[in-house]
Length: 85
Image 1 (cartoon, one colour):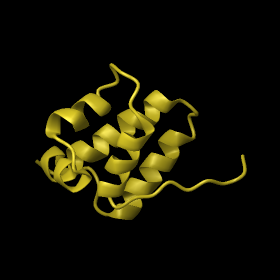
Image 2 (tube, rainbow, N blue to C red):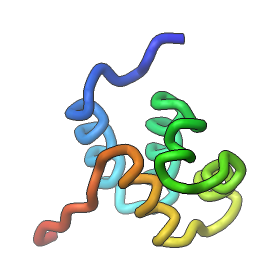
Image 3 (tube, rainbow, N blue to C red):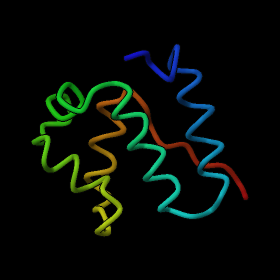
């Protein structure tokens, strides 16, 4: 399996582009894509979550908690950044 992203900058650009949609479900789906690319198991370990918890958080079937999203983004070595709209 080849990785969709070659480096962290590509991931940042991809997530920022998806965030521009203004829809949280689009951003969650994008985070799910990145997690799958990086590998669910290592991301779950780094986030101190189970694979099932990561899967449930990013499934799109439930509203994920903000803390779970923060754990996952931190595990991906990313942080949220706010600017004036």
